[in-house]
Length: 268
Ligand code: DGL
Image (cartoon, rainbow, N blue to C red):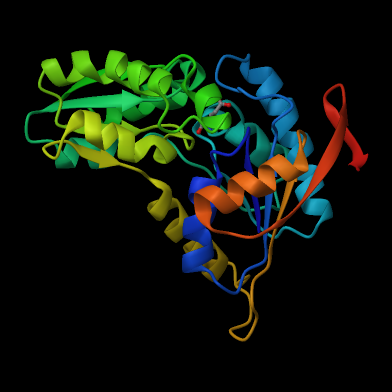
């Protein structure tokens, strides 16, 4: 199974896939040469993710998890059209579970600019946010801090306080992690928001959906198979492997993929 993100964020999904599907081989792709995707025009994200999909299919991925809200918003429809035989599982901010959870009727969504500006997000809001008030923030700079491993740094704390402080003052009691990088700052967010605030991470639901699609298409690995995990990055391989170990406890071989323009040209 292929799993893709702009960087380390999708590892927050990979870890749930590993637990739920221990027999599946997992191939993770972090497009760290092009991170962040959040401020990029959707057409660029479509080109990158299509190239990554070709790469993963070339390594026998039977299903692709787009473990990135931004890439799902920009590219999922395009990927499904371009690769009609390939099953894709995407992800989007958990507005529906948040609307079901909130008691104050006030919800905060933390995502990226591109996710918040997308048609997909507008559609989600129209369908599920009718009776609630939603406060949004594009968390400028947060993805970069997380990529740099600054999970508990003073700048990260200050940024989160700036973002969620006003939401909490408005009475928000539910926060949605609308970017796969954000589960890695969940402990810090919890510390700032306090016990009365529910934080929703859609990653476990995405892993369950991936398992469902595999079973439905009869693509699941045989029961006696032990799944392997390997990682590829368009950035630095040893850095990604170290991050994966630190954040998820998963040991995986990592290799670098070389890009020219909008496409990859090989591994190094
Ligand atoms: N991890 C990605 C997401 O879920 C976004 C990070 C980026 O901006 O590249 O939206």
